[in-house]
Image 1 (cartoon, one colour):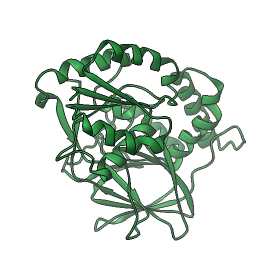
Image 2 (cartoon, helix red, strand yellow):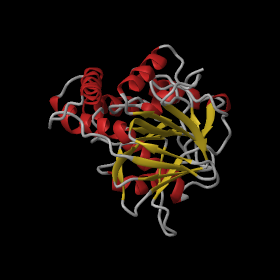
Image 3 (cartoon, one colour):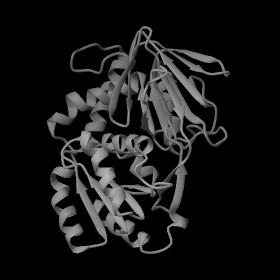
Image 4 (tube, helix red, strand yellow):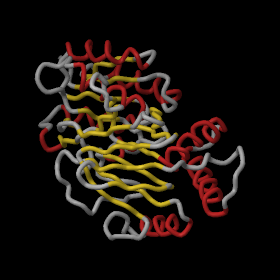
Length: 323
């Protein structure tokens, strides 16, 4: 039996320099069982092996895509007897949205040490539950993909633009995101079109079952089960269990500027702002002629007669390091 099981993806961008330090740390701490996968397809086998050592905490060391793959297999696989151990996420990858929500930030080795220290005592003060987003096309035999943060419309195009155009330049993450933000504003506000700018968002229709629908072209579209939405924004609606949190921002220059101002002023999600739509729902459907969404790093597309259906799952335990 191990106190902590660590699942690492060596091919995650952050692990190119981090993994040797992680290996050394694990070698000095026999309470950690370390399993490395060579590809995402090995996550199932990894969890089957990890389940045998019965860890108190499962730690995922990789980007958001690695976390998404592990959560999907953890939810569907049934590898652990009874309830699976709480999941912790090391700050790694390009975005770290899930890690930040769970209070895991800063140096990954220091975060791993904190997780190990917590695992040696009573976990209950640190365990929180989160529903997951189950994404499918709505067909009866579909195997949903699980995640915690979905970006669509203009936000998805920005994520893909950053991934394919900016990250290959090898710039620091913060500077890469700043360049992407400038490109988005130049494209949206001044109507500029060029190959080096993000692709324009397509019209989408969002249906909230039994709660109406929303149509338009949006600069930002978010569905999440995390506490934070974007730039520190939080939902002002109820935190009822089992509901997905939704936010969309109209793709109009002044609306985008109001959204940024509301985020900087700490009002995003707390006060109603014209052109910013915040809802919650049990089931959310996304229809479009052609529009991408990104769920924790993995890309999906809504197209003609192929909608994206989002549902919330029962609560899953996570380890939160922040007070």
